[in-house]
Image 1: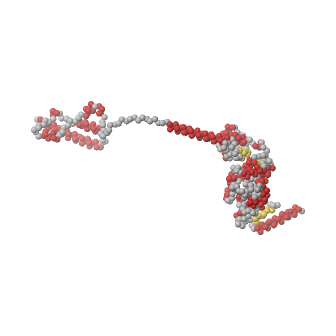
Image 2: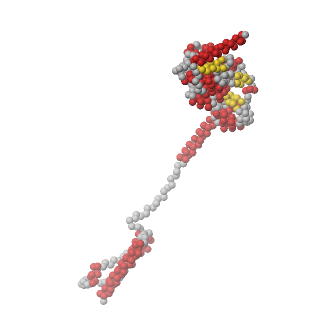
Image 3: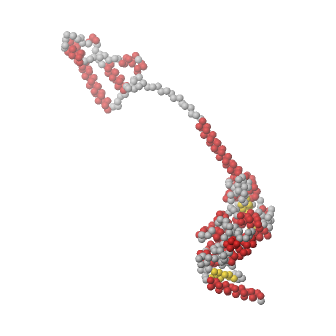
Amino acid sequence: MPNNNNDDIINNILDELERKKNHNDDMASESAGQPEEPVEMREEAANDEQEKQIEIPEAEQPQHDTGRSGESGNYQENVKIRKAPNKSRERQDNPQNHTPVRENEAPAKKKKKKKKKKRSRLPGVLILTTFIFAVSICLSLVIIAYGKDMLGIGKSETTHLIIIEEGATTEEIAALLEEEGIIKSPEFFTLFSQLSGSDTEYIAGEHFLRPNMAYETIIQELTSSESEQKTSVEVTFPEGITLYDAAVLLEENGVCSIDDFLFYFNAGDLGFEFESKLSARSSLKFYQMEGYLFPDTYYFYEDMDPKQVCQKIYMNFDNKMTDERYEKMEDLNLTLDQLITFASIVQQEAATQESMTLVASVFWNRLNHQDQFPLLQSDPTRLYAENVIKPHMEVYDQVIIDAYNTYVSTGLPPGPICNPGTDAIDAVLEAFESDYYYFIANVNTGETYFSTTLEEHEAYQAMIEEQMAAEENQEEE
């Protein structure tokens, strides 16, 4: 009986093991398409399986007969029965072991709390300080700039002639002052004028101002009329007048002396546009600014500053020289000195305004054909050298006299011989084309005769001489 019982027990164990193997295979096939369980769960499941293994009671364990080599002996060789440790009890006994430990995983290190570093406030303070310092410097520079402009500090002493139009507003006056270089900030001047209550007191007309004047002085000049304090003088300069004769007129009318006027007028550099177009000063020119006194009627004051007199005359010439005239001048490849010099000859040579265009064409033809006509042969140039230059030379210089005499020197003289008007200037700029190389005028009748050849010219000359002789005989009778 004992042997039969042992066989039954062994068979039961083998059946149980076979059943468990089939069950595990089924479970593996089902879990192939499912996500893999965590390691902890797999470990617990394995432990549970080990706990479920059938333990054989010691009483039911087969008794082996050392003398028999039957089935019981074979069982001992093929089957090793091992008692699995009860890990569940160990976990119950040791609650600290409940946390599963993953394989090949080091125990978790405790995270140390990082202490929050305190940011330094120094960079922010430095940036703020720098910003405040920069703003302060900028404000200081602005205040200094406005202050210097308001007080006229470090600015030019050149006098400017400002003409205020009737009904001009403070903003328009401020813009004009900025354009003329008197002030730098029209907005600040307008505000200053409003605060001083001068907006409605500006007087239209001519005013002489300097950039180095303070705003208060400028406003005082613009709100007062010089005519109320000084006697006005009207002076008319005719077309073709020389600079010296103009100076004589000014002195005769009590405006300024001849010497003072000639000195300041020839010194120039008064800041007008036409001055920038002038050629370099020449040692052959007798009066550097002869030709730039525009013939017109002017209003001066008795005992007027000669520099202010010059500014009024300069401004008039600057206004007469329009952009259109400058464009024509450049198209003809003329400098401003050449244009005015040419026009001064036409002004003196033409007997009438109508003849100026043809007179100019004669000199254009001679200038363009200098191989045939090297000399202009203008009588007024010779007379200017003899009657104006020679008597007023401090040191006699024949070279200058000859340079102005177009019967001796080729081309245009080194400077104008009088002050031409707009008609003579426009006659030159027209550059009318003709075949004339000669002309002669009857000064008594004002009629001018033009010729292509020398023979024609001489014939006209003889005719005019006869006419003038006949007129003289009639006067004697």
